[in-house]
Image 1 (spheres, rainbow, N blue to C red):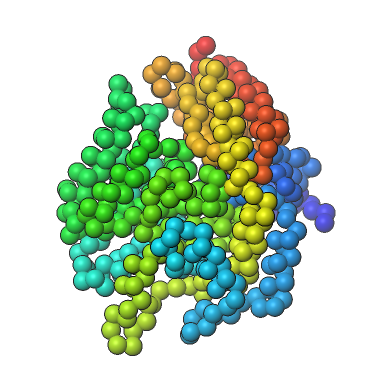
Image 2 (image 1 turned 180 degrees about the vertical axis):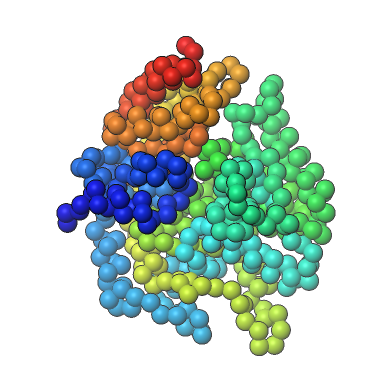
Length: 463
């Protein structure tokens, strides 16, 4: 299908409000319009071809343009596109997907509540947590602890959970029951502190915060990404999550694992909390890779223990009065089932376990470049941090836009990476092989060197 790209470019600026957009730039430059996607590549309206280094947005795990994904959605839409999940009604794909997720998740997470994405899944989770403690008669137990630089979404409560300060500039939040503690940033830990000592420091800070907030009587839950995503792909020190989990249990708190990014293969497992970090959360939230981004779907997985409490009516004739028109949407659930089938059939998690360490090792070869301060992450979730000085870890000035410069240089060379201030994130489709990794790392090296030249020319960096 032919498109008038120039016309679409104008219409896009006139009518489409894009997420996370600098409108002062957007009004002048508009957007590149992606018109096709196949496998590990996307194509823009001008005929340019790009390796997708971010899997859309952490999500197109099985790769683009899978015909069988389109077919199963079309077949389900023809059979039954939608019917209400209310009024004691259900549908086959939602039932089958719930059963499959219970099979894949840690052993006691056997109950699934559906939403339309990660933000809403996290928002819903907090509502359920508060309801759970109300049902137990612990009505003062409301405080949720999140982490600085954690990302949990942009709906009202999930935006409050999000600890990235700039995300909420100009927006209101509901801070009365959310408290943030220190993030686990090993690259920027206090000078002279070993990683083990840093872990002790973070755990002690966490427990001190719980005590200061009212302890067992007031603090309801802790929410964390197994590896922080948009906050900088921050990998906590070894043992951190298990020790934080143990503190939560000590104070009667629920542990919420936000696996919107890490679930469905990004770290080499369908769920990372137990398989990678050795914890069995009370709640896991997922989205993104659940359908590989082919259609919106979010899910909140609840433990048997939580379900036993919330499934008892709070009064005669009362219902569990939360949910959405599209909870357990049959087309979305059918897509998720097919996505999981493809992942299992093609051993995609095994590919990540094999190629992921190679991606990590090859990206670390970029550390010889003058502005590359850190390369971190795990498997198919990686980040490059640029600095002005490797010894002090001082950042380049904000106006240098180093992350954006590197991303633009990469795009010129046929690779899309994500800029976040002084960071560049890679979260590719999980089908990459070693040859693709070598191509990507070569492009990154050329792009960072070109960026270095431009920074010197513009007076932002001195060799």
